[in-house]
Image 1 (tube, rainbow, N blue to C red):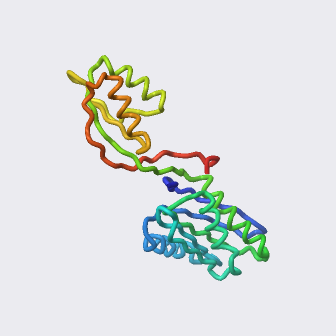
Image 2 (cartoon, helix red, strand yellow):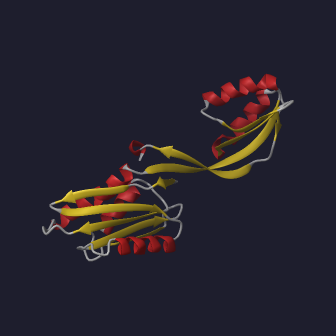
Image 3 (cartoon, helix red, strand yellow):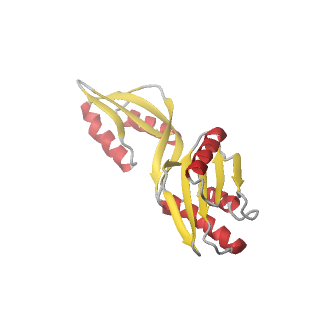
Amino acid sequence: MRILITPGVGEIEEKKSKFIAHLKAVNTEEEAVSFFDEMKKRYWDAKHNCTAFIIGERGENTRCNDDKEPAQTAGRPMLTVLQHADLKNVACVVTRYFGGTLLGTGGLIKAYSDAVKDALAKSVLAEEIEGVKFSFVLDYEAYGRIQREFESRKISFASTDFSDKITASVEIPLSMEDEIRKLLTECTLGKAQIGESVKCAIVKEIKLDEV
């Protein structure tokens, strides 16, 4: 699933109204509510502090709030942007300082959406996938061959220890486990000592144009 690693702050201005968007990674609804309360205290003098969150690996827990803006013009557009980015376990607050000019339904939807998009553009996002980690022991003769095969698959050693033999480990997507175990066996003519797998999460940063 896609997650937030480093949150950015978005800010736009529309007809003298200022919209400030903050994002935060959260794992529970309680964490999201705590974040909302924190932002509302920080921006106590703002006209509106609108909120949205998505929680769960499948995004099964979602909620949004317009904070007295016209219905469906703030929280819902914010939530839609987060869903379009396919983010999970994320909360968002967009603070509005009213500039004296009404924006209308369409203007509000665009402003709140654009504020969240700006925050996302300034954030570091990542994709978290199910992976496995395991270690193996091999001789020096096979190491160079394994290294080249790994490089061609964009796999890095998670650790290496050089002594009379080489003890190394990898963290790879679960979908690649059978392939890599077979590769280690073939490249060492069955001499590699391959350990048991341990499940892990693999986090890979992604660019905004991948969102």
